[in-house]
Amino acid sequence: MISTVTLRPRRPGLAVRLLQSCGADVAAYAAGLTADLRALAADAVAWYLAGLVLLSQLVDATSTMVALANNLPEGNPLSAAVISRWGQPGLFVEKLVISTVVVGNMARLRGRSARVLGVCAAIAGFLAAAWNLHLIV
Image (cartoon, rainbow, N blue to C red):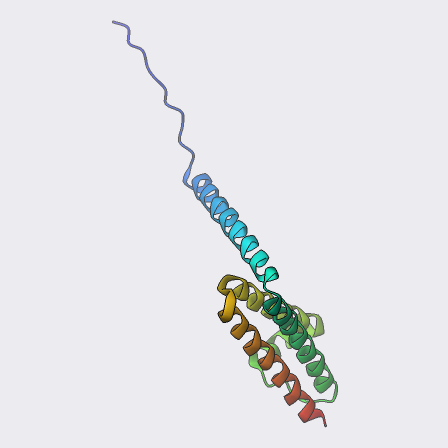
């Protein structure tokens, strides 16, 4: 008696399926974030607040570097660790990451909530810079 054997295609391994699933999740997240950033760009007030957040972090980083040049210690433990490990470039990268996280969350929130987040983040950055300048003078 002769029987035929049907070979099923081999199922991809766990690692391949996991990578495919993660790739699909990342693509969906990127598409959603792009749509959210477009909505943020359409809101003129939130767009200016996002720029203000970036400016406040830049002013804070600059005032921190001036304070450090005058032999004053860094009060923020996270920033102190970053500065001790990576120096000035690390501090500016830290501030860029903070700005990116805030603007990304502003894009996700939209509307009044995004504006409140932008105002609070900008105030926090400018207050930190004012404190640094207070210590210098």
